Length: 110
Image 1 (tube, helix red, strand yellow):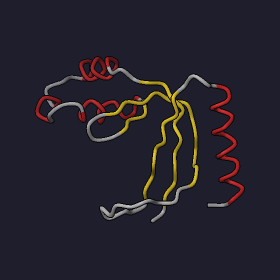
Image 2 (cartoon, helix red, strand yellow; image 1 turned 90 degrees about the vertical axis):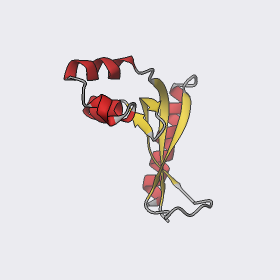
Image 3 (cartoon, helix red, strand yellow; image 1 turned 45 degrees about the vertical axis):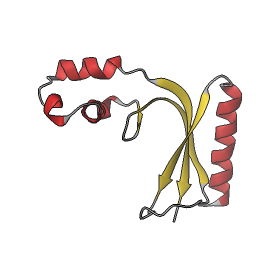
């Protein structure tokens, strides 16, 4: 990643932290490929933004109504999800306890 882009992304993060000192900061790591290897990886700050998030058993979800079906499907067995209509899916989605935080994407290339 370009040093100037990294500097701008870091400055954006620091500004968000300064403007929102009571919000928790959540790092969101992007890996290009790790092949199930364990180890420490060098990363660079990518984008930082304020959003609502939810941690399921399988992944971190950023609140986006375009993902509503996927989020609800992730919360239950598929055969139960298939029985829900659109209104019930929206009710499930709206009932999730989302947490507002500063999300920091960290780019890692392995």
